[in-house]
Length: 270
Image 1: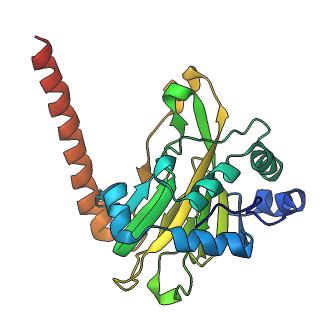
Image 2 (image 1 turned 120 degrees about the horizontal axis):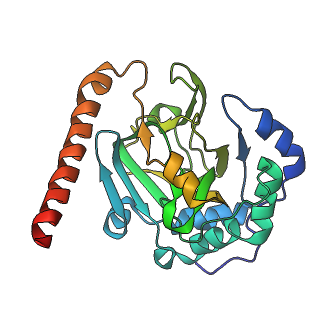
């Protein structure tokens, strides 16, 4: 389809929304339904690649904590309308709106979409509760906000795939948002912003579709060295086997792979 006239995003009073966002528990967040103008949402939904196409274009995940998900981060591979959405979410005007919403006055976007872009999760896919990687080291950026926009028309509640927000001890589920069509969820990322996606149980003929963008503030190399980390997963209270068996086993495998990789590099350098 042809590129739409801008803007795609409907008018939102971000100044008024800021009070709700900043006061939200267990960490700052907000949900906007009908986030995009109707024509924009419909065009993006229509242009979204099939699940099989996403497999071909993107990166897949098949680990214990993240399975059945494919992400396409290269904007050159986006259909025209989705590329336009990406550009609008990264525009100075929208970033300024997010500064108003969040209070991060030096917030910047990420045109490179590290970890973001088009996401699709198929049947039996899931994303365990986690806090996100917190820095992009080589660009000295501190991750501050996530934005998720969903494109799942006629999504049924029993299909799961809900974005879950947990308390800081991952004991209680505070909120969950179904990935319904044209819904947007924005939340602050921090050391207590535990979130995940419940198991997806949609039919094989469909998938959970979303577009993700992340926002940052500048930081120093010292900050990264002192507190930088990758994604940290935590089992839900009912996931006993995952907590005590599968997650420790996977961590051990990763540790062994790193040790073997370091050892091989040492051998090659001799």
